[in-house]
Image (cartoon, rainbow, N blue to C red; front, side, top):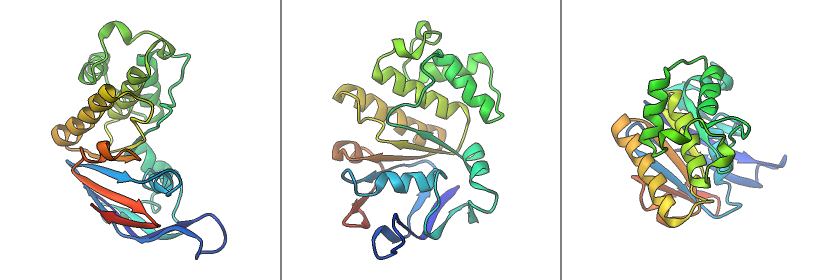
Length: 218
């Protein structure tokens, strides 16, 4: 499985010369953790939204296994291929951790049994006694882990995370990064992390830095 961009560009105004980035050609393969490193306002979150199928580039195409992701529709792409983890977690706060995962499965028309869900929570370090607690009773790091379980439960090949450690302390940040590495290396998934933290980027297999409107592998 390969996700690749072909000459993609993005700009907010009607003037293509006022671009965030352009002519971007990057490849993302299974079994690796990638980071998109950049400062606030550099355009890295916009780039993530394109990879996640939440928006379309102004120029160029994005291919999954050599098929343009727009051909079958971005809704199908999001439903069948990619899971997105947000900095703010985007959990349904009135639900329990388990219910958040079950709701994501229903939306994706997927089904796994409770034993598998509990196995995923164990994988990310959520104790069994917390699974059926409302997520508002969980710490920030625990809520991020719930968001990761929600992404894993849909069994998508691509997991994209927007500043997943931005609200976490150093120790929890390392734990979350280790989880992403395990997901990529042991479950053979493509993990793409958008971050402004060099320390996080240094932990990934491949880093692309977005600086002065250009991507460079570092």
